[in-house]
Each structure stands twice: as C-alpha cells, then as structure tokens.
Amino acid sequence: MAEIIDGKRISREIKDEVKAEIAREGISASLAVIIVGEDPASQVYVRNKKTACEYCGIRSLSYELKEDTPEEELIGLIDKLNKDDTVDGILVQLPLPEHINEDNVIEAIDPAKDVDGFSRRSVGALSIGSRGFVSCTPAGVIELLKRSGVEIAGKECVVMGRSNIVGKPMAMLMLRENATVTVVHSRTRHIEDICRRADILIVAIGKPEMITHDYVKDQAVVIDVGIHRLDPETNGGRKLCGDVDYADVEPVASLITPVPGGVGPMTIAMLMKNVLTAARNR
Ligand code: GUN
Figure 1: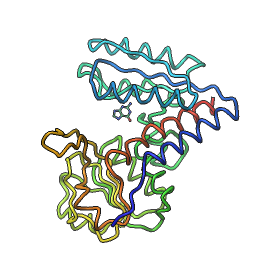
Figure 2 (figure 1 turned 120 degrees about the vertical axis):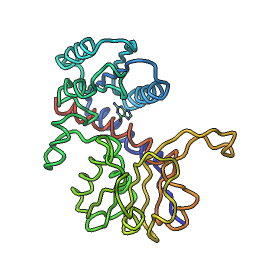
Figure 3 (figure 1 turned 120 degrees about the horizontal axis):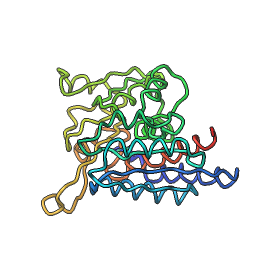
Figure 4 (figure 1 turned 90 degrees about the vertical axis):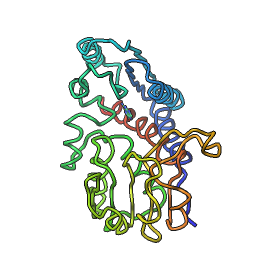
C-alpha cells in the first residue's frame, strides 16, 4: 500500500505561504494573463489561475483575444505589458492558434516577467544552475517530493517524456537536486527495464494509464504528471486519469500522486510563488 501524496493540501500550503508573505510585507503583486481564442481547457486553466491570484492577494489582469488576432498585435500587447511597471508577471496561455509562432511570443516576454519560465533565458539559467524562473509544473514536482520527505540526492530518477515544458526542465531540476537522472521517451529501447531502475519515477509521457506495475520497482516513488479526460459513462464515473494506471501501480509504490489532486494543483501554486518572486525583484 502506497502513501498518497496530497497535492491539493500541499498546494494550499504554498498558496497560504504566498498569501501570508504578501500580506505581511505589504507587497503589491500583479499578473497579466493572456488567452487567445476559446479553447475550453485553456479557459478553465486561466480561470483557475485568476482565482488563485485573488486568493493570494495578487492583482490579476485579464486579456482575452480573439482566435484570429494577428501575431503582431499579441506581441504589441506583450511589449506594452513589459513596459508597465505595475505588471510583475506575464503569462500567455498555451497552446496558441496555429497562425501564431509560439517561440516568437515567448521570446517577446521580458525575462524578468517570465513567470512561466518558458523563455530561452529562463531555460538556459536553469541548465547552468543560475537564478531564473523555473517552469511551474516541474518546480511543483520538486516541492511535492521535498514536502513529502523524499530524499532526492543520490537517488536513481527516471523522467519519462522530453517536452520543453515538463520533461527537460524536470530532468535539469532533479540533476540540480543531485539525483542520477535518466530521460526516456518514445524512441527509447527496453523502456520498462530502465524505468524499473528508478527510485523516483516521474511520468510525463502523455498516454492515458500507460504505466503499469511492470515499469515500477518495488517501493519506488511514482509521480504522475499526465492528465486525460475520460468518459464517466464507460469509466465507472471517473472523469480524469493520468499517465499511470493508478490501481495497478499503487500496491507496489511507496509514495504515489493521484490524478486529480496530485501534480495538477501544484502548477498554479508555483505560479503564485513565481509572481511573488517577480514582485520582490522589481
Ligand atoms: N498550457 C498548458 N500548461 C501551461 C502552462 O503551464 N503555462 C501556460 N502558459 N500555458 C500552458
């Protein structure tokens, strides 16, 4: 029987810390959130980010742009927000419509306001171990591990997935914490054998319930970054699942994150922390 890592509780703890620091130090912090188009999942994420800002005492500015907004117009707005001293953080919700180049948009954000940590400067800083904003989801995984008492230094860590937003920064962060890190992906051979070496297995592969007990060493710590929508009608009322087959893996793990209520809520909590840092740096 694994112990469950309660991401909801830990994320609330972090938001409460941010809220208390803002109140105690009288900091005025603000986040500008930009969404282009009407992707329903993105709309939910953006709404949750605004709610978290309100909870923490962070001012949130909302920009809802039409699906056919030209790239130049979006970059013009970012330029305006870069120059605005009352704005501490700028977040452009991804994915963007196809006619907009994501890279151009991310690079337009002032690195001092890049609270998502997606820019080349932020990613570069992470990879050479200097200060900068770290992508919120992988940063949230580190917090989950630390606040659950998991020792990272010297441990075998396998990261499944190599995306720019999760897998790659995740590997860098685990390296910074002195783990021995292996990254596996869709082209890796003998993937199960490699995963079974992991003391800490971090799964961000994007395939619903792909990871069974065959991938997991006895008593490993299992972190599931995946989130997928299910049809409750055909799934016994379940609406969401992760990349890990929870029922199959839970009996062999020592600690495990559920979906929902594991990594998910941590992303927004870490975003709040990054906005506070941006406001302090100002
Ligand atoms: N889309 C999915 N996850 C994220 C995130 O963490 N930040 C932004 N900006 N967009 C996303």
